Length: 465
Image (cartoon, rainbow, N blue to C red; front, side, top):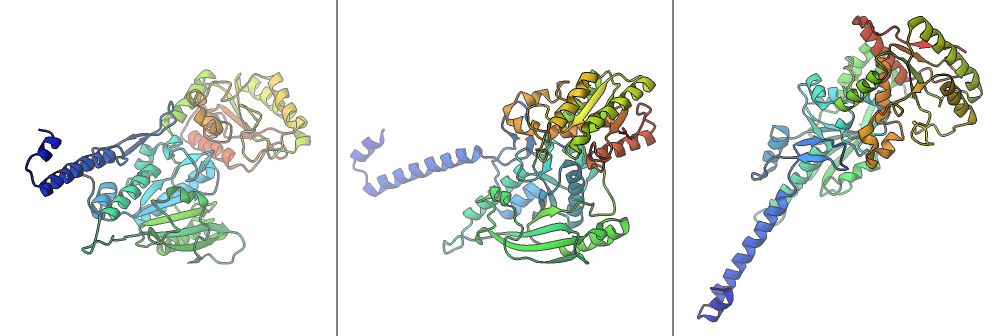
């Protein structure tokens, strides 16, 4: 019998209205459940190189948390969640890798969940668009830090979202919403060369808050007191406090002490240059994808090659004709004495476009072009582009900007040079001598030689003018 037929019968009007209300209520409840199922919490993030979106896999959401304590147990394994989010690491990848390890050590000392900050263009920063595992192997990182719980930025977003949903569902007896703002400590931690003593102090609202943190609004809004109660602090570090193991041991105790707090979220905008703890942890392992690409390049070079790191940005342009002749002379000598016929060049010179491989290298001159032209006319020079490196990424337009800058291919260059049989770099005037990139390669090669890797014939040599 239809509702129209029921209405025509001697049926009390009030009962008919109640029936319509009940049907309407259950209909919209069902729609809300369906809507909730389409926005399930994140439990695993995978990078897909063939898609422009991050693939999200999640568990069944039938038992959505009904309280903040349940939510925290779901995400953090305990009734309270306390995060450390170093959302800006103010250096390029080689140094940023070192700094991020220090903040993981800090998270362990503070017993906080470590947020794995996004990456892009050789940076670790929440301004970046790719997940942390685009550069790094998070499984191996977990093995290095077994006592630390790691969460991606997407995990953090889903925690914020579910926390916000729980807050909206809770009401007091008089019908007013119970507000439970996020408790946040925002700290600017930076090296300062012109101070006589390290200090930690309160700071004015919004002090050194990077604009990229606004991407979490409205779930985390540092400007809205109904959403977040925020305290701002600053630490300025004297350089000498980070130079030696002894000074870092003393400093790290101070750092841990001042940042021991009950706030749910510790946000850090950092530029520290040196390790923060006396124990320097191993390099954060790179992703299997990048390691496999490095191996493919090594195989294409018949596993025998000279690796060159030539960063032209810090060269003296007028010296480059003499520089390239010095390099050619050195290459001929090594090839003759050691019987190596293949050459691999890691450089900031443009490879995919007219734009250099470094975001800070803008003043290309005819000296730079002529030097590379001379080198190419003398030898067959191989690069990550000529050998088909990162081919999957190059087919996808979303990675175009990354590949035209100093991003993932810089890591690839580093790994290929580490694996080279013979490694050389430029002298003063031809190249940047005190390059952390070159130093990282030399350090790893030194460790391998100490471990009796007979395929490496030297640590690093520099050609002469």
